[in-house]
Image: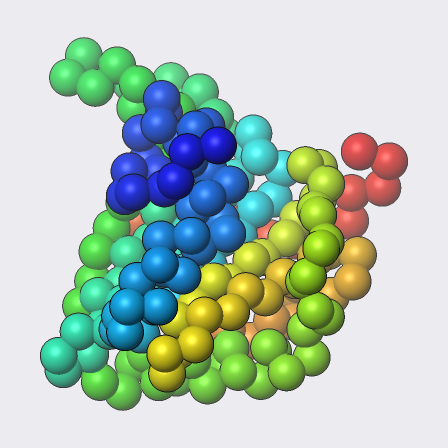
Length: 181
């Protein structure tokens, strides 16, 4: 495994750094050095169907917010000669949030995080819906894992708050039961 260093959208780099990205290794490293507030949410349905990530990093006057979704892998409608790998890459959209906007997201997340099971030593199956949050908050790094079979993912109040600022235009795949997949 390679340490994630900032290029999860690239088709060739993503497989090498995906688990480091999901674990928030880069956030952990920056947090230990006194880094700014940083939240990363990885929302995964079936990997080939949809992965979405949301990142919110504190900046003066608010936060830098990035949404990166990919729906069906290999969608040829995203093919362009200028970007031959487009159908397999994550899209990206950036927004600068004002001071009060990140607070609403973090408050909603805090309510859900209080009920989250401890993720230590747990692994998620590749065919599960899940939401993993890595965060540096007040100089402390922590990871939360919300799994389909242990948490009602459709009841997570912070996900709709994140979606309010997702202007990528890529449809959000709702959680549904996956019996026998």
